[in-house]
Image (cartoon, rainbow, N blue to C red; front, side):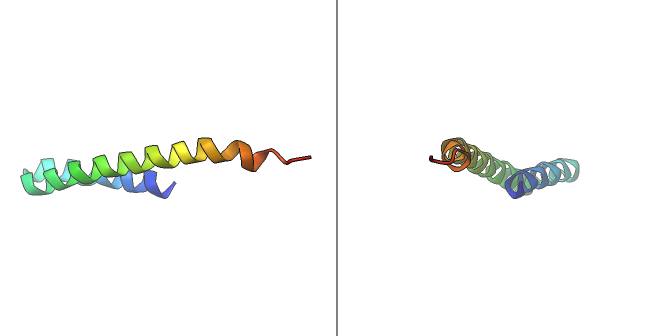
Amino acid sequence: MLANEVYLCWIVLLQAARALRDSELETLCQQFDGETKRQISWLITRIKHIAPQTLVVAE
């Protein structure tokens, strides 16, 4: 959930950078937005891999 919150913050900052016509901030926001998307993707992959093992109790 925190990673998604960070992603939303990058979107807001990107919009502000565009409104201010701040190309340097816009470039940074796009860079970190991409990194955050990759982190979210990695987390989802880990959750999908671990969740079945966590939820199924061995008998």
